Image 1 (tube, rainbow, N blue to C red):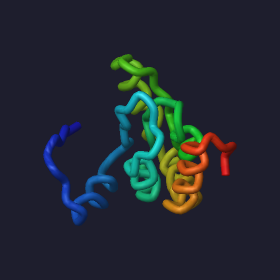
Image 2 (image 1 turned 120 degrees about the horizontal axis):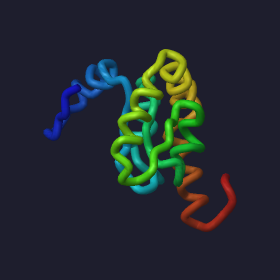
Image 3 (image 1 turned 30 degrees about the horizontal axis):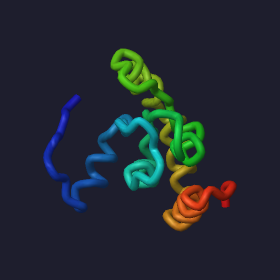
Image 4 (image 1 turned 60 degrees about the vertical axis):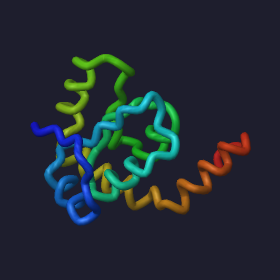
Length: 115
């Protein structure tokens, strides 16, 4: 495992996602993160809190975690790293277009039911 804390330019993003077993979104709640659809479009399953849009968008490609539980997060990365989860991520990525996510975010910000 290698941790990178520097800037990653656009040409390198696809290569890094191709090498990744999972994308870990370290938010308390995923709502409008571009990292979610980007990882899914690259076929990378997710480890993230189940609140917000993460569970709805990622579906079976999501392995939920509880905020601050590091051992559980490590176990979640191990569970989510599989070919089946990668295919689920690709499928969710195809369904989660930027346009469909924008509609959901706009509806939620207006307090409307899922649009």
